[in-house]
Image (tube, rainbow over all chains, first blue to last red; front, side, top):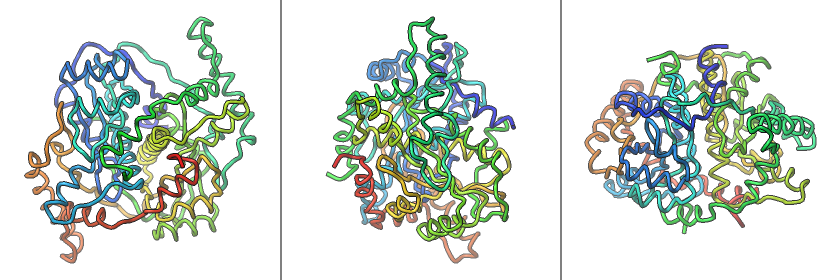
Length: 245
Length: 245
């Protein structure tokens, strides 16, 4: 198609990096690409936190239980952020509220659009990256480590750096499962596609693990969703002033 | 830098399109680029709905109050979606729950990462695009029009097509306001940057509107945030089975 679409379609998560820090110019280039993403009604309700302090990186890697949160070229944490707007509105005498579900969605979408631009920019430069959703294993602790004020929530991290392994592209659900037109397709209409996909993913794992693992996609994600994880996220977010109280 | 970073940094929203529909191959290419984005724990908790039916497009444009929701090359609606996982888990006898804040964040982030890949792919092909957050003006009505089952919420739309105007790049907040390192910068530390930015944005509007408009960024977004809009989003999302009840 074209070079950019090729980059998008060749994405793979990288979890092992060469021991080289990104320089300031590269970080700036990545953040500026992130900032260029669309933002809801121009609100720019996010902040990107770079973490280079080794004690903080270590503490965050303990929350995520992933060593690559400590060992990478650069660690970013993406924050939904209304603190700035709130402080500015106080100065103007009309404090705004951000405690409705609408603002949580806006801040989360704004941060995610910026993050994905950063991911694409990094991969276009030959860097590797991986999202770190596991910072939500203990969101309260992340807030403490990064000393985040009210109005700010740490949504996820991203590690970026020079890849030290090739990574492998993980096949996505078939097009007809994800893309619907004009009306929502009942699951039974795409069950055949999901079953075929399950077989394919099971083969992929079998091959990569010398037969030690062969879980299908649906078993894997249903197993994950059936664990009642991160039940504290709601209370922590509310503690930061979101979702009413 | 490189072609992809140039595309990212040159983003501008397009709100007027030539009267040409995207062909099926282009739609597929865009959706496959979207699907290649990262997804939390492989869960793929989203669906992309294309809307080509003219009555449905008209109805959605009335919700958003934007004519370009009706007149474009293609209209996409991005859905956070656990319906598929729920149905599959029922078949396996262990129904999953998606009613915690964690799952709302995962579905919203998954959909937004996919959407941003789609946006970048479209721009790389010379197409224009604009996000349609205003579908949340009446989320219940969007659910009705698209007949979305429980477990599915329409987060935002995106129009794509051949641009019929140049658009203009809107300057973002200065780098030092958005990017923090190791600790969160208090607003007073970046107030000078925000003030300079406000002046710049005010000039931008003055120039584009022949002096009829000169609102600074902070006035504009604080004005917007002070309106208590979309208060129904919370109840609608809960009605779809999210955020507990």
